[in-house]
Amino acid sequence: MLALAWNMLKPETLTERQNEDQVTRRLILSVAKNLDREAFASLFDAFAPRLKSFMIRKGASPEVAEDLVQETMISVWRKAGLYDPAKGSALTWVFTIARNLRIDRIRKESTLPLVELGDYDAPSDDAGGDEIVTRRQEAESVNRALAEIPAEQKQVLMLAFVDDISQSEIAARLNLPLGTVKSRMRLAYARLRKTLETLN
Amino acid sequence: MTINHHLDTATIVAHAAGNLDEALSMVVATHLDLCPVCHQASRQAALLGGEILGGLDGTSVSESCRSKTLSMLDTATLHRFPKSSLRKSAVPSPLNHLLAGQALKDLKWKNKAPGLGLYDLPVSAASRGKLFLMRISAGKAMPEHGHGGEEITLILSGAYSDSIGRFAAGDVADLDQEFEHRPIVEMGADCICLVATEAPTRFKSWPARLLQPFIGI
Image (tube, rainbow over all chains, first blue to last red; front, side):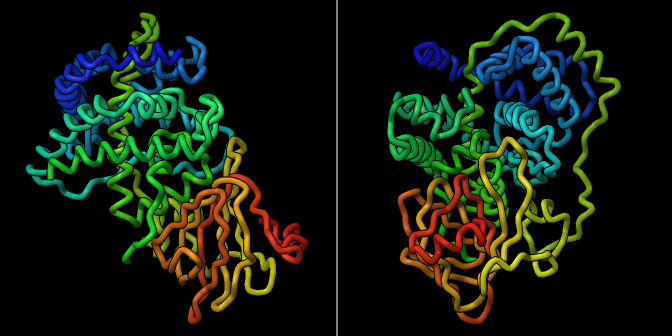
Protein backbone atom coordinates (compact mmCIF):
# COMPACT_ATOMS: atom_id res chain seq x y z
CA MET A 1 0.00 0.00 0.00
CA LEU A 2 2.84 2.35 0.76
CA ALA A 3 4.46 1.67 -2.58
CA LEU A 4 1.18 2.77 -4.07
CA ALA A 5 1.32 5.90 -1.93
CA TRP A 6 4.72 6.80 -3.35
CA ASN A 7 3.41 6.68 -6.87
CA MET A 8 0.82 9.21 -5.89
CA LEU A 9 3.51 11.80 -5.42
CA LYS A 10 5.03 11.89 -8.84
CA PRO A 11 7.36 14.89 -9.26
CA GLU A 12 5.69 16.03 -12.49
CA THR A 13 2.35 16.38 -10.76
CA LEU A 14 3.97 18.74 -8.29
CA THR A 15 4.70 21.38 -10.91
CA GLU A 16 1.30 20.83 -12.48
CA ARG A 17 -0.24 21.67 -9.18
CA GLN A 18 1.38 25.09 -9.04
CA ASN A 19 -0.70 25.99 -12.08
CA GLU A 20 -3.65 24.15 -10.67
CA ASP A 21 -3.54 26.30 -7.59
CA GLN A 22 -3.77 29.48 -9.66
CA VAL A 23 -6.74 28.09 -11.59
CA THR A 24 -8.42 26.91 -8.40
CA ARG A 25 -8.06 30.33 -6.79
CA ARG A 26 -9.75 31.99 -9.74
CA LEU A 27 -12.60 29.47 -9.72
CA ILE A 28 -13.24 29.86 -6.00
CA LEU A 29 -13.22 33.65 -6.27
CA SER A 30 -15.70 33.48 -9.15
CA VAL A 31 -18.00 31.25 -7.11
CA ALA A 32 -17.71 33.72 -4.23
CA LYS A 33 -18.39 36.82 -6.31
CA ASN A 34 -20.88 35.65 -8.91
CA LEU A 35 -22.27 32.38 -7.56
CA ASP A 36 -20.75 31.01 -10.76
CA ARG A 37 -22.17 27.51 -11.23
CA GLU A 38 -19.91 26.72 -14.15
CA ALA A 39 -16.85 27.55 -12.08
CA PHE A 40 -18.26 25.34 -9.34
CA ALA A 41 -18.75 22.45 -11.76
CA SER A 42 -15.10 22.81 -12.79
CA LEU A 43 -14.08 22.70 -9.13
CA PHE A 44 -16.21 19.61 -8.66
CA ASP A 45 -14.58 17.85 -11.60
CA ALA A 46 -11.12 18.80 -10.41
CA PHE A 47 -11.52 17.87 -6.76
CA ALA A 48 -14.24 15.24 -6.35
CA PRO A 49 -12.11 12.27 -7.50
CA ARG A 50 -9.23 13.10 -5.14
CA LEU A 51 -11.62 13.85 -2.30
CA LYS A 52 -13.19 10.45 -2.88
CA SER A 53 -9.77 8.77 -2.70
CA PHE A 54 -9.08 10.74 0.47
CA MET A 55 -12.28 9.49 2.12
CA ILE A 56 -11.76 5.90 0.96
CA ARG A 57 -8.24 5.89 2.36
CA LYS A 58 -9.77 6.62 5.75
CA GLY A 59 -11.96 3.55 5.41
CA ALA A 60 -15.20 5.00 4.01
CA SER A 61 -17.18 2.75 1.66
CA PRO A 62 -17.53 4.12 -1.89
CA GLU A 63 -21.11 5.20 -1.08
CA VAL A 64 -20.19 7.00 2.13
CA ALA A 65 -17.16 8.49 0.38
CA GLU A 66 -19.45 10.01 -2.27
CA ASP A 67 -21.74 11.42 0.43
CA LEU A 68 -18.73 13.06 2.01
CA VAL A 69 -17.52 14.36 -1.36
CA GLN A 70 -20.94 15.90 -1.86
CA GLU A 71 -20.92 17.49 1.59
CA THR A 72 -17.40 18.82 1.10
CA MET A 73 -18.21 20.36 -2.27
CA ILE A 74 -21.41 21.94 -0.94
CA SER A 75 -19.29 23.46 1.84
CA VAL A 76 -16.91 24.81 -0.80
CA TRP A 77 -19.91 26.52 -2.43
CA ARG A 78 -21.23 27.85 0.86
CA LYS A 79 -17.87 29.01 2.19
CA ALA A 80 -16.31 30.34 -1.02
CA GLY A 81 -16.86 33.89 0.27
CA LEU A 82 -14.60 33.12 3.21
CA TYR A 83 -11.65 31.97 1.11
CA ASP A 84 -8.82 34.42 1.45
CA PRO A 85 -6.03 34.07 -1.15
CA ALA A 86 -3.65 35.87 1.19
CA LYS A 87 -3.87 33.03 3.67
CA GLY A 88 -2.56 30.23 1.56
CA SER A 89 -3.10 27.79 -1.22
CA ALA A 90 -6.55 27.00 -2.58
CA LEU A 91 -5.75 23.29 -2.50
CA THR A 92 -5.06 23.49 1.19
CA TRP A 93 -8.30 25.35 1.76
CA VAL A 94 -10.38 22.68 0.02
CA PHE A 95 -8.66 19.83 1.80
CA THR A 96 -8.98 21.61 5.14
CA ILE A 97 -12.74 21.67 4.60
CA ALA A 98 -12.70 17.96 3.75
CA ARG A 99 -10.58 17.16 6.76
CA ASN A 100 -12.78 19.10 9.17
CA LEU A 101 -15.83 17.39 7.74
CA ARG A 102 -14.25 14.02 8.30
CA ILE A 103 -13.51 15.01 11.90
CA ASP A 104 -17.06 16.36 12.39
CA ARG A 105 -18.46 13.03 11.26
CA ILE A 106 -16.58 11.23 13.99
CA ARG A 107 -17.83 13.65 16.63
CA LYS A 108 -21.37 13.89 15.37
CA GLU A 109 -23.04 12.48 18.43
CA SER A 110 -21.21 14.81 20.80
CA THR A 111 -22.61 17.99 22.26
CA LEU A 112 -19.22 19.65 22.10
CA PRO A 113 -19.31 22.96 20.29
CA LEU A 114 -17.02 22.36 17.34
CA VAL A 115 -13.88 24.38 17.21
CA GLU A 116 -12.61 25.32 13.81
CA LEU A 117 -9.42 23.34 13.82
CA GLY A 118 -8.19 24.85 10.60
CA ASP A 119 -6.97 28.39 10.31
CA TYR A 120 -8.75 28.99 7.08
CA ASP A 121 -12.13 30.09 8.28
CA ALA A 122 -11.09 32.88 10.57
CA PRO A 123 -11.09 36.43 9.22
CA SER A 124 -7.53 37.32 8.30
CA ASP A 125 -5.57 40.36 9.22
CA ASP A 126 -5.45 42.69 6.25
CA ALA A 127 -2.90 41.30 3.88
CA GLY A 128 -1.16 43.70 1.57
CA GLY A 129 -0.32 42.94 -2.06
CA ASP A 130 3.20 41.97 -1.08
CA GLU A 131 1.90 39.37 1.22
CA ILE A 132 -0.28 37.84 -1.48
CA VAL A 133 2.77 37.52 -3.73
CA THR A 134 4.69 35.92 -0.89
CA ARG A 135 1.88 33.43 -0.32
CA ARG A 136 1.96 32.44 -3.96
CA GLN A 137 5.72 31.86 -3.83
CA GLU A 138 5.12 30.00 -0.63
CA ALA A 139 2.90 27.48 -2.42
CA GLU A 140 5.74 26.81 -4.86
CA SER A 141 8.22 26.41 -2.04
CA VAL A 142 6.00 23.94 -0.27
CA ASN A 143 5.99 21.56 -3.18
CA ARG A 144 9.71 22.00 -3.64
CA ALA A 145 10.21 21.16 0.03
CA LEU A 146 7.94 18.15 -0.27
CA ALA A 147 9.98 16.85 -3.19
CA GLU A 148 13.16 17.18 -1.09
CA ILE A 149 11.87 15.51 2.05
CA PRO A 150 13.47 12.05 2.43
CA ALA A 151 11.24 9.03 1.80
CA GLU A 152 11.09 7.86 5.41
CA GLN A 153 9.84 11.28 6.53
CA LYS A 154 7.41 11.51 3.65
CA GLN A 155 6.05 8.13 4.67
CA VAL A 156 5.01 9.38 8.13
CA LEU A 157 3.49 12.52 6.57
CA MET A 158 1.44 10.37 4.18
CA LEU A 159 0.20 8.20 7.03
CA ALA A 160 -0.79 11.29 9.05
CA PHE A 161 -2.36 13.40 6.31
CA VAL A 162 -3.79 10.77 3.99
CA ASP A 163 -4.46 7.71 6.13
CA ASP A 164 -5.35 9.93 9.07
CA ILE A 165 -3.79 7.79 11.76
CA SER A 166 -2.26 9.05 14.99
CA GLN A 167 1.44 9.12 15.74
CA SER A 168 1.20 6.14 18.06
CA GLU A 169 -0.71 4.18 15.40
CA ILE A 170 1.96 5.13 12.85
CA ALA A 171 4.62 3.90 15.27
CA ALA A 172 2.78 0.59 15.68
CA ARG A 173 2.23 0.15 11.95
CA LEU A 174 5.87 0.84 11.06
CA ASN A 175 7.16 -0.98 14.10
CA LEU A 176 9.11 2.07 15.24
CA PRO A 177 9.37 3.78 18.61
CA LEU A 178 6.96 6.72 18.95
CA GLY A 179 9.95 9.03 19.44
CA THR A 180 11.27 8.10 15.99
CA VAL A 181 7.93 8.91 14.35
CA LYS A 182 7.85 12.26 16.11
CA SER A 183 11.41 13.11 15.17
CA ARG A 184 10.68 12.30 11.51
CA MET A 185 7.76 14.70 11.64
CA ARG A 186 9.91 17.37 13.23
CA LEU A 187 12.59 16.89 10.59
CA ALA A 188 10.06 17.08 7.76
CA TYR A 189 8.65 20.30 9.17
CA ALA A 190 12.14 21.73 9.72
CA ARG A 191 12.92 21.09 6.05
CA LEU A 192 9.78 22.92 5.02
CA ARG A 193 10.54 25.88 7.26
CA LYS A 194 14.07 26.12 5.92
CA THR A 195 12.77 26.23 2.36
CA LEU A 196 10.18 28.85 3.29
CA GLU A 197 12.75 31.00 5.08
CA THR A 198 14.58 31.60 1.83
CA LEU A 199 11.49 33.57 0.75
CA ASN A 200 11.89 36.16 3.48
CA MET B 1 2.32 38.33 26.26
CA THR B 2 5.79 36.91 25.69
CA ILE B 3 5.68 33.23 24.95
CA ASN B 4 8.80 31.23 25.74
CA HIS B 5 7.57 27.66 25.55
CA HIS B 6 6.05 26.48 22.30
CA LEU B 7 4.40 23.37 20.92
CA ASP B 8 6.45 20.45 19.68
CA THR B 9 6.38 20.72 15.87
CA ALA B 10 5.42 17.03 15.72
CA THR B 11 2.27 18.01 17.65
CA ILE B 12 1.61 20.85 15.22
CA VAL B 13 1.87 18.49 12.23
CA ALA B 14 -0.50 15.98 13.86
CA HIS B 15 -2.97 18.77 14.63
CA ALA B 16 -2.78 20.04 11.05
CA ALA B 17 -3.41 16.52 9.78
CA GLY B 18 -6.47 16.33 12.03
CA ASN B 19 -5.45 13.20 13.88
CA LEU B 20 -4.39 14.56 17.21
CA ASP B 21 -6.82 13.45 19.90
CA GLU B 22 -9.66 15.93 20.34
CA ALA B 23 -8.71 16.88 23.91
CA LEU B 24 -5.10 17.57 22.92
CA SER B 25 -6.28 19.41 19.79
CA MET B 26 -8.38 21.72 21.92
CA VAL B 27 -5.32 22.80 23.93
CA VAL B 28 -3.33 23.20 20.71
CA ALA B 29 -6.06 25.36 19.13
CA THR B 30 -6.22 27.53 22.25
CA HIS B 31 -2.45 28.02 22.24
CA LEU B 32 -2.49 28.83 18.50
CA ASP B 33 -4.96 31.60 19.26
CA LEU B 34 -2.34 33.19 21.54
CA CYS B 35 0.95 32.36 19.81
CA PRO B 36 1.84 33.85 16.41
CA VAL B 37 4.92 31.61 16.14
CA CYS B 38 3.02 28.33 16.48
CA HIS B 39 0.12 29.74 14.47
CA GLN B 40 2.49 30.34 11.57
CA ALA B 41 3.97 26.85 11.91
CA SER B 42 0.48 25.36 11.91
CA ARG B 43 -0.43 27.24 8.75
CA GLN B 44 2.73 25.94 7.07
CA ALA B 45 2.02 22.38 8.17
CA ALA B 46 -1.48 22.69 6.68
CA LEU B 47 0.08 23.79 3.38
CA LEU B 48 2.20 20.67 3.39
CA GLY B 49 -0.96 18.62 3.89
CA GLY B 50 -2.68 20.42 1.01
CA GLU B 51 0.23 19.57 -1.28
CA ILE B 52 0.20 15.93 -0.25
CA LEU B 53 -3.54 15.55 -0.70
CA GLY B 54 -3.47 17.49 -3.94
CA GLY B 55 -1.10 14.83 -5.26
CA LEU B 56 -3.45 11.92 -4.63
CA ASP B 57 -4.70 9.89 -7.56
CA GLY B 58 -8.43 10.30 -7.99
CA THR B 59 -11.18 7.68 -7.82
CA SER B 60 -13.94 8.13 -10.37
CA VAL B 61 -17.09 9.71 -9.00
CA SER B 62 -20.55 8.65 -10.14
CA GLU B 63 -22.64 10.90 -12.33
CA SER B 64 -25.43 10.83 -9.74
CA CYS B 65 -23.10 12.25 -7.08
CA ARG B 66 -22.19 15.08 -9.44
CA SER B 67 -25.76 15.91 -10.45
CA LYS B 68 -27.06 15.64 -6.88
CA THR B 69 -24.37 18.05 -5.70
CA LEU B 70 -25.10 20.57 -8.45
CA SER B 71 -28.84 20.38 -7.79
CA MET B 72 -28.28 21.25 -4.15
CA LEU B 73 -26.63 24.58 -4.84
CA ASP B 74 -29.87 26.57 -5.02
CA THR B 75 -30.98 25.59 -1.57
CA ALA B 76 -27.57 25.76 0.13
CA THR B 77 -27.33 28.73 2.45
CA LEU B 78 -24.22 30.76 1.96
CA HIS B 79 -21.90 30.90 4.86
CA ARG B 80 -20.75 34.25 6.15
CA PHE B 81 -18.58 34.82 9.16
CA PRO B 82 -20.52 33.48 12.08
CA LYS B 83 -21.46 36.37 14.30
CA SER B 84 -20.16 35.34 17.63
CA SER B 85 -22.75 35.89 20.30
CA LEU B 86 -19.99 35.78 22.87
CA ARG B 87 -18.60 39.02 24.12
CA LYS B 88 -14.88 39.71 23.91
CA SER B 89 -13.16 37.78 26.61
CA ALA B 90 -9.80 37.47 28.28
CA VAL B 91 -10.15 33.74 27.60
CA PRO B 92 -8.69 32.67 24.21
CA SER B 93 -11.44 32.01 21.71
CA PRO B 94 -11.56 28.18 21.32
CA LEU B 95 -11.75 27.79 25.08
CA ASN B 96 -14.16 30.71 25.37
CA HIS B 97 -16.54 28.88 23.04
CA LEU B 98 -16.28 25.75 25.10
CA LEU B 99 -17.07 27.73 28.26
CA ALA B 100 -19.90 29.56 26.48
CA GLY B 101 -18.37 32.86 27.52
CA GLN B 102 -18.16 32.22 31.26
CA ALA B 103 -15.24 33.83 33.07
CA LEU B 104 -12.75 31.44 34.66
CA LYS B 105 -13.44 32.80 38.14
CA ASP B 106 -17.18 32.15 37.76
CA LEU B 107 -16.81 28.45 37.01
CA LYS B 108 -17.97 25.88 39.53
CA TRP B 109 -14.53 24.61 40.45
CA LYS B 110 -14.33 21.30 42.22
CA ASN B 111 -11.86 21.41 45.09
CA LYS B 112 -9.99 18.15 44.81
CA ALA B 113 -7.30 18.75 47.39
CA PRO B 114 -6.10 21.75 49.38
CA GLY B 115 -4.93 24.30 46.84
CA LEU B 116 -6.09 22.26 43.85
CA GLY B 117 -9.27 23.00 41.92
CA LEU B 118 -10.43 21.16 38.81
CA TYR B 119 -13.06 21.90 36.22
CA ASP B 120 -13.83 19.17 33.68
CA LEU B 121 -14.51 20.13 30.09
CA PRO B 122 -16.55 17.96 27.70
CA VAL B 123 -15.01 15.94 24.90
CA SER B 124 -16.87 13.64 22.53
CA ALA B 125 -17.12 9.91 23.10
CA ALA B 126 -14.63 9.35 20.28
CA SER B 127 -11.87 11.05 22.25
CA ARG B 128 -9.45 8.95 24.26
CA GLY B 129 -8.37 12.04 26.13
CA LYS B 130 -9.46 14.11 29.08
CA LEU B 131 -9.72 17.86 29.04
CA PHE B 132 -9.88 20.00 32.17
CA LEU B 133 -8.96 23.27 33.75
CA MET B 134 -6.70 23.12 36.77
CA ARG B 135 -6.25 25.84 39.35
CA ILE B 136 -3.33 25.56 41.73
CA SER B 137 -2.99 28.05 44.56
CA ALA B 138 -0.07 30.47 44.73
CA GLY B 139 3.01 28.89 46.29
CA LYS B 140 1.66 25.34 46.06
CA ALA B 141 3.39 22.39 44.46
CA MET B 142 1.75 19.81 42.30
CA PRO B 143 2.46 16.19 43.26
CA GLU B 144 5.42 14.85 41.31
CA HIS B 145 4.20 12.84 38.38
CA GLY B 146 5.27 11.26 35.14
CA HIS B 147 3.06 10.89 32.13
CA GLY B 148 1.43 7.66 31.13
CA GLY B 149 0.65 9.14 27.73
CA GLU B 150 0.50 12.41 25.87
CA GLU B 151 -0.13 15.51 27.93
CA ILE B 152 -0.27 19.16 26.91
CA THR B 153 -0.68 21.98 29.42
CA LEU B 154 -1.38 25.59 28.50
CA ILE B 155 -0.91 28.24 31.16
CA LEU B 156 -3.78 30.72 31.13
CA SER B 157 -2.83 32.84 34.13
CA GLY B 158 -0.25 32.90 36.89
CA ALA B 159 3.03 31.06 36.50
CA TYR B 160 4.87 27.97 37.69
CA SER B 161 8.40 26.70 37.55
CA ASP B 162 9.76 23.22 37.24
CA SER B 163 13.02 21.60 36.22
CA ILE B 164 12.53 22.81 32.63
CA GLY B 165 11.98 26.44 33.44
CA ARG B 166 9.35 29.05 34.13
CA PHE B 167 5.95 28.73 32.48
CA ALA B 168 3.71 31.80 32.41
CA ALA B 169 0.50 32.82 30.64
CA GLY B 170 0.51 31.69 27.00
CA ASP B 171 3.32 29.15 27.48
CA VAL B 172 2.62 25.56 26.69
CA ALA B 173 4.22 22.45 28.16
CA ASP B 174 4.15 19.81 25.42
CA LEU B 175 6.27 17.13 26.97
CA ASP B 176 7.49 13.68 26.15
CA GLN B 177 5.97 10.78 28.00
CA GLU B 178 9.08 9.84 29.92
CA PHE B 179 9.48 13.25 31.45
CA GLU B 180 8.90 13.65 35.20
CA HIS B 181 8.21 17.07 36.61
CA ARG B 182 7.14 18.85 39.75
CA PRO B 183 5.72 22.28 39.06
CA ILE B 184 5.68 24.84 41.86
CA VAL B 185 3.35 27.79 41.45
CA GLU B 186 4.81 31.25 42.00
CA MET B 187 3.66 33.39 44.87
CA GLY B 188 1.27 36.20 44.18
CA ALA B 189 -1.39 34.57 42.04
CA ASP B 190 -3.07 31.22 41.46
CA CYS B 191 -2.02 29.40 38.34
CA ILE B 192 -4.81 28.36 35.99
CA CYS B 193 -3.99 25.88 33.24
CA LEU B 194 -5.85 24.12 30.46
CA VAL B 195 -4.73 20.50 30.47
CA ALA B 196 -5.31 17.62 28.07
CA THR B 197 -4.14 14.11 28.81
CA GLU B 198 -4.47 11.03 26.68
CA ALA B 199 -4.00 8.51 29.48
CA PRO B 200 -4.37 8.86 33.23
CA THR B 201 -1.51 10.71 34.86
CA ARG B 202 0.20 8.51 37.43
CA PHE B 203 1.65 10.01 40.55
CA LYS B 204 4.94 8.77 41.81
CA SER B 205 5.01 9.02 45.59
CA TRP B 206 2.73 6.66 47.48
CA PRO B 207 0.70 9.35 49.35
CA ALA B 208 0.02 11.03 46.05
CA ARG B 209 -0.89 7.70 44.51
CA LEU B 210 -3.32 7.06 47.34
CA LEU B 211 -4.80 10.47 46.70
CA GLN B 212 -5.11 9.93 42.98
CA PRO B 213 -8.57 8.31 42.94
CA PHE B 214 -9.87 11.27 44.89
CA ILE B 215 -8.14 13.90 42.80
CA GLY B 216 -9.27 12.13 39.69
CA ILE B 217 -6.66 13.30 37.23
